[in-house]
Structures are given as structure tokens and as C-alpha cells.
Length: 382
Image (cartoon, rainbow, N blue to C red):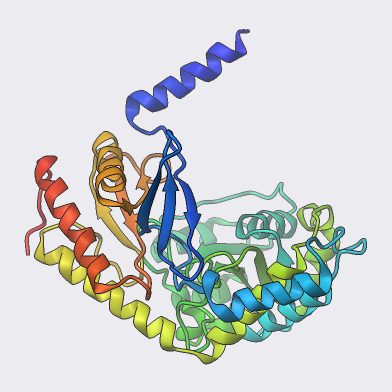
């Protein structure tokens, strides 16, 4: 088989559909978030404003976080030096797991190198990777209950779901799912990666905001979004975390997070447990952006979260608008196409932060207003 021709043919298909992904070569400007320097294919520099970062609160450049990381490097060096089992457990890891357990009101917590890895390792181990998998319709309590009713009542069950969904920005009915879990004897596994730091009195997520953390068997989160650093984790009972620690290959055989990252995460979590300033300012920016989009007839999903999906509905036009925003307006927002979202729902996923100014917001919406006319795209009706 001509493997190279196969690879190139598949990539050509992505180009033809307008779904080929190009990475933006960015250099974040310390202390100037959300500003960055972009390097184009010719090596030329351009100042841009980032509108699609998951560093939702700008904590990746908060002085408390960066100073904690610098101190940890001076104290401990660069890397962890091994897996958690073999010389890689640094005291900062221990402190971070304590902070996370406290954040979610759980007995224990366990660190991973990313949110993806924490889900893969924890769910794969809890379910032994060979259990029957049943997918219920998105946020449908009726469908979930029907599938629970159809399951073997003697079989162990775990309901895995998210709080804030990253592409549509909708929020799961956590209480009602917990009610069904209690009714049918299932564990619950809540992915809060897009909510931790953002919601709740101390940044514990949607479950904290709604007073439901105690009803969830496992809460999973990330350190790489609102907390501004890197890594993933689960928070649960001591026995469950110890079970994952002892049996998950994705934990056992992975080099531990560098101590500096753990130290930065500790500083970020501690700050957001005490400060509401970032969350309140962020919510105000989201409201203002939505109001501006409405005034200009730019269609966006009206969800209850901080994620603002501007719907284009065409893969090629979505990429074209993104390219023009970047090249001509200094606005960086990545196009989101299939398979991340269904075809005909292609979008610009905008994530405003507390650090985007009024001028930034006006510039973004003004540029979208002009490009909407150039593309002859439908306007939203007020």
C-alpha cells in the first residue's frame, strides 16, 4: 500500500471541505493578556488580541501564579524527576491535591498531566475498559432513565457527564441526574473542566454553585483553563482515588507534573477561592459582548454560560472569516468545524475574559459586522 498517498489524500479532503486546521503561531505577552504576537508563515510579526483562549480569567499571567512558579523552579528545578511512584512526588503535588480535595468538599484528589488524561485514566480504570457503554441523548433525563431502566439492575453503573459543555455552552441538569443515579444505584462522574474556577463561591464549579458537590461520586477538573496552568485531576473519596492511583496505567507510568506547574496551580486555586473579582468582571464582559452581538444582528447561541458560540453554519466561510479577522483585524478566534461540532453548525467559539477592554469588544464586533455583510450571512432578528 502507498501509505504516503493515503495520508495526502485524506489531508486533501480536509482542504476541500474547508476543515484543514492551521495552528496560529503565537507568543503570549506576559502581563498583557489577552494580547499576543503572531508569527505568520513568512516569519513576520503581528500584534493580535486572542478571543478563543481557555485561560478564561487570565490567571496564566496573574502575578501570584507566575511568582509561585518562579519560586518553585528556584527551589526544585525544572522537572519532577520521575513518575509519582518513583521519586516524582514533590511536596507541591501533595499541597495541590489537598487544595483540590478542599475545593470540591471531597476526602481526596489525584493529579494527572491533563484533563483528557484524567478522564481516560479514571473512567477507563473504574469501568475496566471493557464494560458496556451506553450513550444517552444530550441532557435528556427521559432517555437517561429509559437506559437505566433497561440495564441489568445487578450491574454496577456510572453516569458520566459534563457541567458546562464546551461548544454550545449549555449546562447539564446535575440535580436531576443525581436523582436518577440514586434511584438506580449508579455512581456519578461530573466533568467540570469548563466550570472550575468560573462558578461557585470559591470556584468549585457548577456543582458548588448549586450545592450539589456532596452528591457526586467523582468530580473531574482541569488546571489548564480557568486556573491558567496545566494538568487534570479527580476529586472523590479516599478509597476511590487510591484505587485509581494504584491501578490506572495512565497515572502509574506517566512522569509527574513539574513542581513549578503544581505550585502555580496551588497559587491560582487559593486566590480564586478567596477572590470574586475575576468572576464578577468576567460575567460582566460576557453580558456586554452578547449585547453588542445582538445589536449588530450577529447570531450566537443564547446559553447560560461564559462560552459565546457565533454561528456561521458553513465550514469554508467560517475559516475564511477567521482568516480575515486574524490577517486584517488582528483578531484571533479559531474556527470550530466538524467533527468537533455537527456539519452546518460551524462557528467561531468566542471566550471573553475580564481583561478584554471595551475597545477590544467594540473592535471585535465591528469586524464581525463588516464580514457578515461581505459573506452575505443571515442576521439574527432582535
